[in-house]
Image (cartoon, rainbow, N blue to C red; front, side, top):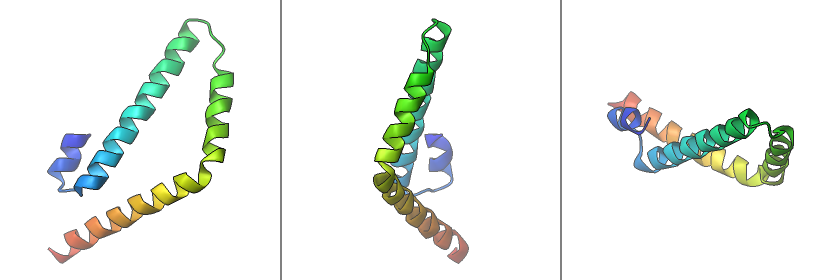
Length: 81
């Protein structure tokens, strides 16, 4: 993922953010899947993650806004070149 974004000349701050976000999400999904395969009920983990998402909704909105600004900035530089 990082190599693909580097090849497409994506902004370095966006590259770091997206690659760490993808890494964290993949690790969480692997842990939950592994726990489910071991027989642990995973519904409570999913509920806790949903509640955390609701609690952090303002922060997540600000992060999404920042990512959109960086994406639009990258798109403008592509159109101008």
